[in-house]
Image 1 (tube, rainbow, N blue to C red):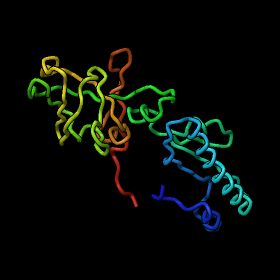
Image 2 (cartoon, rainbow, N blue to C red):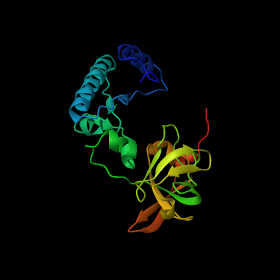
Image 3 (cartoon, rainbow, N blue to C red):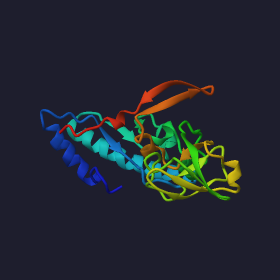
Image 4 (cartoon, helix red, strand yellow):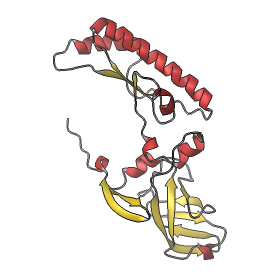
Length: 223
Protein backbone atom coordinates (compact mmCIF):
# COMPACT_ATOMS: atom_id res chain seq x y z
CA UNK A 1 0.00 0.00 0.00
CA UNK A 2 3.08 2.23 -0.29
CA UNK A 3 3.10 3.00 3.42
CA UNK A 4 5.51 0.67 5.24
CA UNK A 5 7.38 -2.55 4.60
CA UNK A 6 9.68 -3.48 1.76
CA UNK A 7 9.25 -4.47 -1.89
CA UNK A 8 9.25 -8.27 -2.36
CA UNK A 9 12.33 -8.16 -4.54
CA UNK A 10 14.36 -6.58 -1.72
CA UNK A 11 13.02 -8.70 1.14
CA UNK A 12 15.53 -11.54 0.91
CA UNK A 13 18.58 -9.30 1.36
CA UNK A 14 16.93 -7.66 4.35
CA UNK A 15 16.07 -11.06 5.86
CA UNK A 16 19.66 -12.27 5.49
CA UNK A 17 20.87 -9.09 7.18
CA UNK A 18 18.40 -9.54 10.04
CA UNK A 19 19.48 -13.15 10.42
CA UNK A 20 23.08 -12.06 10.88
CA UNK A 21 22.29 -9.83 13.85
CA UNK A 22 22.54 -11.56 17.25
CA UNK A 23 19.69 -9.72 18.93
CA UNK A 24 17.08 -10.14 16.18
CA UNK A 25 15.14 -13.27 15.33
CA UNK A 26 13.20 -13.34 12.06
CA UNK A 27 10.11 -15.49 12.58
CA UNK A 28 7.79 -14.58 9.70
CA UNK A 29 6.53 -12.33 6.94
CA UNK A 30 3.44 -10.15 7.07
CA UNK A 31 1.84 -9.51 3.69
CA UNK A 32 -0.97 -7.01 4.20
CA UNK A 33 -3.22 -6.73 1.15
CA UNK A 34 -5.44 -3.92 2.41
CA UNK A 35 -5.65 -2.48 -1.10
CA UNK A 36 -8.01 -5.31 -2.14
CA UNK A 37 -11.56 -3.96 -1.91
CA UNK A 38 -13.26 -5.66 -4.86
CA UNK A 39 -16.97 -6.11 -4.08
CA UNK A 40 -17.14 -9.36 -6.08
CA UNK A 41 -15.90 -12.38 -4.14
CA UNK A 42 -14.32 -13.95 -7.22
CA UNK A 43 -12.23 -10.86 -7.95
CA UNK A 44 -11.14 -10.63 -4.30
CA UNK A 45 -10.11 -14.27 -4.30
CA UNK A 46 -8.08 -13.83 -7.47
CA UNK A 47 -6.27 -10.82 -6.01
CA UNK A 48 -5.71 -12.63 -2.69
CA UNK A 49 -4.19 -15.59 -4.55
CA UNK A 50 -1.76 -13.20 -6.21
CA UNK A 51 -0.74 -11.82 -2.82
CA UNK A 52 -0.24 -15.32 -1.46
CA UNK A 53 1.89 -16.39 -4.42
CA UNK A 54 4.20 -13.38 -4.07
CA UNK A 55 4.63 -13.75 -0.30
CA UNK A 56 5.08 -17.52 -0.51
CA UNK A 57 7.82 -17.19 -3.13
CA UNK A 58 9.65 -14.65 -0.99
CA UNK A 59 9.31 -16.84 2.10
CA UNK A 60 10.68 -19.88 0.27
CA UNK A 61 13.64 -17.87 -1.03
CA UNK A 62 14.44 -16.52 2.44
CA UNK A 63 14.11 -19.95 4.06
CA UNK A 64 16.46 -21.38 1.44
CA UNK A 65 19.15 -18.88 2.38
CA UNK A 66 18.64 -18.82 6.15
CA UNK A 67 17.63 -22.42 6.73
CA UNK A 68 14.72 -21.34 8.95
CA UNK A 69 11.03 -21.79 8.20
CA UNK A 70 8.94 -18.62 8.28
CA UNK A 71 5.40 -18.00 9.43
CA UNK A 72 3.14 -16.33 6.85
CA UNK A 73 0.70 -13.70 8.11
CA UNK A 74 -1.63 -12.52 5.39
CA UNK A 75 -4.62 -10.35 4.70
CA UNK A 76 -7.11 -7.96 6.19
CA UNK A 77 -10.86 -8.35 6.63
CA UNK A 78 -11.74 -8.33 2.89
CA UNK A 79 -9.39 -11.23 2.05
CA UNK A 80 -9.65 -13.04 5.39
CA UNK A 81 -12.06 -15.74 4.07
CA UNK A 82 -9.51 -16.68 1.39
CA UNK A 83 -6.32 -16.72 3.41
CA UNK A 84 -7.85 -18.55 6.38
CA UNK A 85 -8.31 -21.60 4.14
CA UNK A 86 -4.56 -21.90 3.57
CA UNK A 87 -2.94 -24.31 6.02
CA UNK A 88 0.37 -22.43 6.03
CA UNK A 89 -1.11 -18.97 6.78
CA UNK A 90 -2.18 -16.97 9.78
CA UNK A 91 -4.88 -14.37 9.19
CA UNK A 92 -4.63 -10.74 10.29
CA UNK A 93 -8.12 -9.26 9.93
CA UNK A 94 -9.23 -6.46 12.21
CA UNK A 95 -12.57 -4.94 11.29
CA UNK A 96 -14.34 -8.32 11.34
CA UNK A 97 -14.19 -8.31 15.15
CA UNK A 98 -16.93 -5.66 15.34
CA UNK A 99 -17.78 -5.12 11.64
CA UNK A 100 -19.09 -1.80 10.36
CA UNK A 101 -21.38 -0.27 7.78
CA UNK A 102 -18.58 0.55 5.37
CA UNK A 103 -17.52 -3.06 4.97
CA UNK A 104 -21.11 -4.30 5.05
CA UNK A 105 -21.85 -2.23 1.97
CA UNK A 106 -18.56 -3.02 0.28
CA UNK A 107 -18.56 -6.75 1.08
CA UNK A 108 -22.21 -7.88 1.33
CA UNK A 109 -21.21 -11.54 1.02
CA UNK A 110 -19.12 -11.57 4.19
CA UNK A 111 -20.98 -13.51 6.92
CA UNK A 112 -20.37 -11.03 9.74
CA UNK A 113 -22.85 -9.07 11.88
CA UNK A 114 -22.52 -5.77 13.71
CA UNK A 115 -21.19 -6.15 17.23
CA UNK A 116 -20.47 -2.53 18.15
CA UNK A 117 -22.75 0.50 18.25
CA UNK A 118 -22.52 4.07 19.45
CA UNK A 119 -25.40 5.43 21.51
CA UNK A 120 -26.42 9.06 21.11
CA UNK A 121 -29.32 11.34 22.07
CA UNK A 122 -31.35 14.05 20.46
CA UNK A 123 -30.39 17.28 22.25
CA UNK A 124 -32.10 19.87 20.05
CA UNK A 125 -35.02 20.04 17.64
CA UNK A 126 -33.94 22.56 15.01
CA UNK A 127 -37.02 22.71 12.78
CA UNK A 128 -39.62 20.42 11.23
CA UNK A 129 -37.03 18.30 9.42
CA UNK A 130 -33.78 18.69 11.36
CA UNK A 131 -32.56 17.61 14.79
CA UNK A 132 -29.20 17.74 16.54
CA UNK A 133 -27.59 14.82 18.39
CA UNK A 134 -24.58 14.65 20.70
CA UNK A 135 -22.43 12.57 18.35
CA UNK A 136 -19.63 14.86 17.28
CA UNK A 137 -16.39 13.75 15.70
CA UNK A 138 -15.00 13.30 19.19
CA UNK A 139 -17.40 10.36 19.42
CA UNK A 140 -17.37 8.64 16.02
CA UNK A 141 -14.65 8.20 13.39
CA UNK A 142 -14.67 11.25 11.11
CA UNK A 143 -12.11 10.44 8.41
CA UNK A 144 -14.80 9.32 5.94
CA UNK A 145 -17.23 11.61 4.11
CA UNK A 146 -20.76 11.99 5.43
CA UNK A 147 -22.68 9.94 6.33
CA UNK A 148 -20.24 8.63 8.93
CA UNK A 149 -22.85 6.72 10.88
CA UNK A 150 -26.13 4.91 10.17
CA UNK A 151 -28.91 4.50 12.71
CA UNK A 152 -30.52 1.16 13.47
CA UNK A 153 -33.67 2.65 14.93
CA UNK A 154 -33.83 5.68 12.64
CA UNK A 155 -33.07 4.55 9.07
CA UNK A 156 -34.65 7.73 7.68
CA UNK A 157 -32.24 10.01 9.57
CA UNK A 158 -29.43 11.36 7.37
CA UNK A 159 -26.38 13.22 8.76
CA UNK A 160 -25.99 16.57 7.00
CA UNK A 161 -23.34 18.29 9.13
CA UNK A 162 -20.78 17.25 11.73
CA UNK A 163 -18.73 19.18 14.28
CA UNK A 164 -16.74 18.45 17.43
CA UNK A 165 -19.70 17.88 19.73
CA UNK A 166 -22.70 17.65 17.43
CA UNK A 167 -24.21 16.01 14.39
CA UNK A 168 -27.22 17.45 12.57
CA UNK A 169 -29.66 14.99 11.06
CA UNK A 170 -32.22 15.56 8.34
CA UNK A 171 -35.34 13.61 9.27
CA UNK A 172 -38.78 13.16 7.66
CA UNK A 173 -40.57 14.59 10.71
CA UNK A 174 -38.77 15.99 13.73
CA UNK A 175 -41.82 15.29 15.95
CA UNK A 176 -40.71 11.66 15.89
CA UNK A 177 -37.38 12.71 17.41
CA UNK A 178 -38.11 14.43 20.75
CA UNK A 179 -35.29 15.70 22.93
CA UNK A 180 -33.78 12.78 24.82
CA UNK A 181 -34.60 10.14 22.22
CA UNK A 182 -31.79 7.59 22.06
CA UNK A 183 -30.43 6.52 18.68
CA UNK A 184 -28.17 3.55 18.05
CA UNK A 185 -25.56 4.21 15.38
CA UNK A 186 -23.45 1.88 13.26
CA UNK A 187 -20.18 3.65 12.38
CA UNK A 188 -19.07 3.67 8.77
CA UNK A 189 -15.56 2.85 10.04
CA UNK A 190 -15.43 1.17 13.44
CA UNK A 191 -11.63 1.08 13.91
CA UNK A 192 -10.96 4.77 14.70
CA UNK A 193 -14.27 4.98 16.58
CA UNK A 194 -13.20 2.34 19.11
CA UNK A 195 -10.07 4.27 20.09
CA UNK A 196 -12.16 7.34 20.98
CA UNK A 197 -13.44 5.59 24.12
CA UNK A 198 -11.82 4.40 27.35
CA UNK A 199 -14.30 1.56 27.77
CA UNK A 200 -16.76 -0.44 25.73
CA UNK A 201 -19.94 -1.65 27.41
CA UNK A 202 -20.75 -5.29 26.70
CA UNK A 203 -24.48 -5.92 26.25
CA UNK A 204 -26.01 -9.39 26.45
CA UNK A 205 -29.77 -10.01 26.28
CA UNK A 206 -30.44 -6.26 26.50
CA UNK A 207 -28.43 -5.91 29.70
CA UNK A 208 -24.98 -4.41 30.24
CA UNK A 209 -22.97 -7.27 31.73
CA UNK A 210 -19.40 -5.95 31.84
CA UNK A 211 -17.00 -3.42 30.35
CA UNK A 212 -13.89 -3.84 28.23
CA UNK A 213 -10.97 -1.46 28.59
CA UNK A 214 -9.84 0.01 25.28
CA UNK A 215 -6.10 -0.50 25.60
CA UNK A 216 -5.23 1.64 22.57
CA UNK A 217 -6.28 4.69 24.60
CA UNK A 218 -3.38 4.14 27.01
CA UNK A 219 -0.53 4.50 24.55
CA UNK A 220 2.79 6.27 24.60
CA UNK A 221 6.07 6.36 22.72
CA UNK A 222 8.44 4.00 24.50
CA UNK A 223 11.54 4.20 22.28
